Amino acid sequence: MAFDTLLIGTNNAHKLEEIQAMLADLTVRVIGLREAGIDHEVDETGTTFEENARLKADTYAQMSGLPTLADDSGLEVAALNGAPGVYTARWALPDLDNPHRSYARVLAELKGRPFHDRIARFVCVIALARPGHETVTVEGVLPGVIAEEPRGSGGFGYDPVFYLLDYDQHLAELAPEEKNRISHRGQAIARAREVISHWT
Image (cartoon, rainbow, N blue to C red; front, side, top):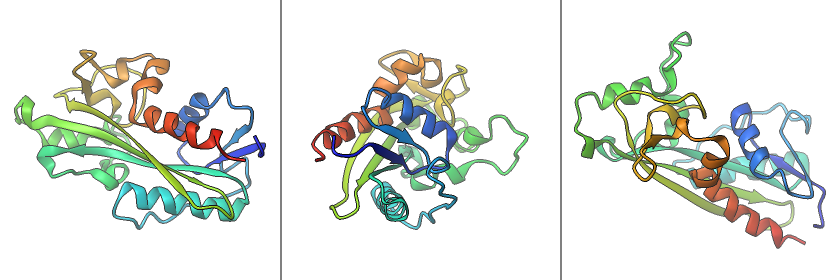
């Protein structure tokens, strides 16, 4: 490849670790914002996952001068008209002492709803930005159902309440390697790799 470093444009340590694991076999250094000396949080003013991913990738690529991968991802629940959507991270309860704060509100909103009303999907849009080049986006989607209670100790965020019909397991119950292979982010990363492989 004609570059030796890829910047991951996120301040989320869990997300950075997950993406680095997915890209571990690349022949380039995959670094986070802290390692690049960047202490800046992009204001996610977009109304779609793609807009926010582009905002982050373009901003961090401009600040660093490095090829940059940034994503925006979230949960869409059909019965909640697609909410929380782009506001997924901000839907968490303000109670910092609640270990289930990330998904407690979704469970409360769906309380008493039948199985077919709990259909949901995770969406991830990745933007790939390089100074002097047009930014490219790719997408991954993982369908599932919001369970009535959490299960599993893996993953983070909404993973414990996201039930996978094909696996009869919650996302948080999967081994990290399996989750990374099938997840919305894993799918988007696989497509991003295709784009990166053609960079010269």
